[in-house]
Length: 80
Image 1 (tube, rainbow, N blue to C red):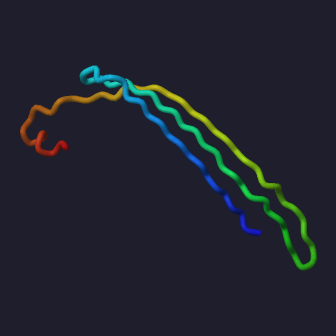
Image 2 (cartoon, one colour):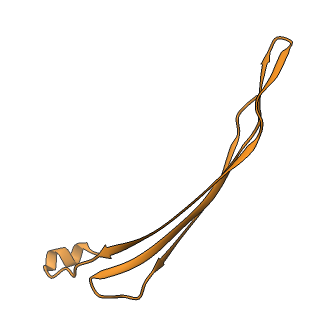
Image 3 (spheres, rainbow, N blue to C red):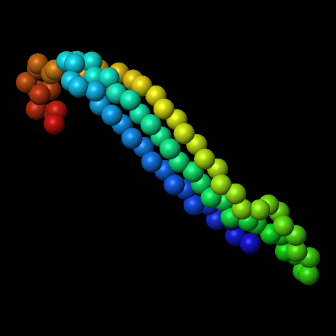
């Protein structure tokens, strides 16, 4: 049989209030995947290789984003 995997994924990012050039943020990732069962077939022989199952994951973190104001006119025209 064909292996089928169905992923489900959610990512959240929360930017804290502007603090000038340093901008703190928090991230949260949640997800899971369903893996279908797989059978082995050869001539008249059939066996189950593995059963279907779910796998879940979660991850959280914090960070700092540094920004600088561009003073040079050429650099200002390149930023958007």
